Image (cartoon, rainbow over all chains, first blue to last red):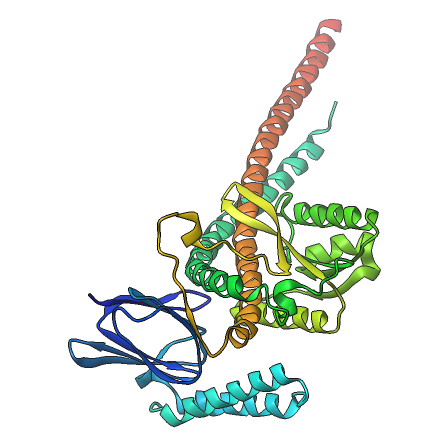
Length: 135
Length: 295
């Protein structure tokens, strides 16, 4: 019994196929999802979604942030984007880091929600830069 | 008797109008295809978001810490109406329908003693509502000259709306847009955005199905704090792209009718032209003949 994995962005369905296991970058640490997992809704942060099929890791996708809904049968990832790791670009990551830094500088430090959002964006851009392989 | 030169000029001008309308119809038809595909592609995200939100909201709505995006400010005094229209006209009643629906809603609310504010998306809506509610428009956005509407555009609008909510500038937010049903049918729809109407879980609709009890990580409050703004942006994005598809559909229908009307008109004018020409010839002949007989 595989897990029905779906990765959806606001503009389209990015991926939908049954996989053996998927590891998602939850806000409180990586979370592996096997069939029969307890139902959960988790917040995601910048990191890799790793897909395992037939005992091997078959793909790695970078997600900026998002949510995941897990039930015993399926795992639905809602992310603004999912870029195959090989295509994550250093330049893009550097640009995003600059944007995120300027947002963080400008944000009202007393507004907790806004500050946390800015921090998260900053974190996501840093992770993207660390993972980037393409120039 | 109409003069021949004037008729000829008239026929030419209607013919060139027909060329323009039929070209516009073809352009809209091809844009419609693309817009429709985009609108359909965006559906899965909205569906899944609604599913997660219903699970979350069900367990958080009762708590006193529930965020204002979900439960509102607890008042019902100031209404923000977001009207989504197109930037360009020549699309039949497409823009006027939204404008009229917004005006009717605003008048109803004002009759109940409420305060109404507008956020207008699209140039046509702004022009329409400026006539009656110029001082009530809080912000307006246009995408004139842009090829496509991106998700980031919807996010920008959502951020603005949230900013207004935080300042306490409104209590209830309603979105009015044209929902794309088919090429010939766009339905003007009103949706309440804030407080967020909680979609009913599927599990409850089908008795016997096991109601999933979710664990939340981090907490429900943290998740809701992230999910609700995203949901707002998704709702706005959905309205924007549905409206974009609807606009092309409405324009296609309008231009199809215009092309047909121009064709009918050309037919009538040509008939009139030919009759007039024949009448002229006949009267000239009569003059010649009667002149010859008089000799």
